Amino acid sequence: MKTLAKGHHIRIVSPSSSIERLGGFEANLAAKEKLEELGFRLSFSENYFENDIFFSSSIESRVSDLEATFSDPTVDAIMTTIGGFNCNELLPYLNYDVIAQNPKIFCGYSDTTALLNGIYAKTGMQTYMGPSYSSFKMQQGQEYQSKMWLNAVTQSQYALTPSTEWSSDAWYDPSLPRSFFPTEWKVYNHGKASGTAIGGNISTLNLLTGTEYAPKPDKYVLFLEEAEDDNYVIILRHLTAILQAYPNPQAVLFGRFPKETEMTQEILMAIFDKHPILKQVPVMYDLDFAHTQPLFTITIGGEVSINTQKQSIEFKTH
Image (cartoon, rainbow, N blue to C red):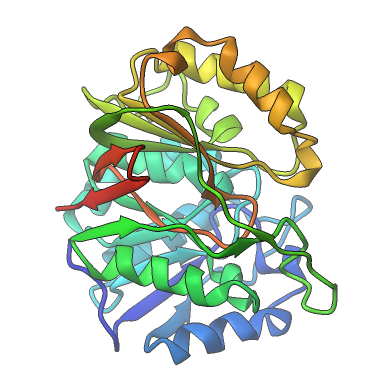
């Protein structure tokens, strides 16, 4: 799979929610303009404007768009519009031979976790958990977010570094005020580790448990985060299930939890304290991924090395 370069063609697809959930195409043109400013050409999938009762489109339309995009030799990378709640519907119907024979950078986050990990599990193709198309219309914090995304998709080796500040506000509405706080990556348990990066949204990753779409690398590092929808009690349940499905991680890295989850430092430490494995491997938290902003980008299926003393997270991809 080739890295991305200026002038390359990015196709935008909606495997979960449609652009209508975000106010429609015109309301998101700032994202198109930002990606073009970064040097890329954009197009939109054939069924991009389809929108149903679930703010999504039919399974057939979404599968067709993904397979057509992977098959199109003029497309260099694929980016999802946003997350949602239903892209796992597509997993049994995708032609994974088509995907494997046409590897491309495929990027998104949140509900896209199911596709990112499912495609990696079925094909071995590395995928990218990072900003979606709509993320690029965010103004404050965009410089860091764009830089981290470019580092990941244009280089075979890259390091993650903290943002200067973060927010848990409605980034998608530029008319609303935002509050920012100094970024501080934190360590629950120190150590060094390396392995294959898997994970993403905790509740979405749980949807893959027991299926052929759950990745099963020998040595894995879990990257875990949760959306605004679930409070800390639900997060505790989902995390327990994840650590039962993946009981031997080399390390676990947690993204910041958005304010809607009502997660506090005290509650988070009480959750971590429940799990003996988190006292045995390196664990970092409050990192720049998840449903706060800005986001860094990671490679699902990439090899990652972690040193908590140095707060070092380095990726190598193939």
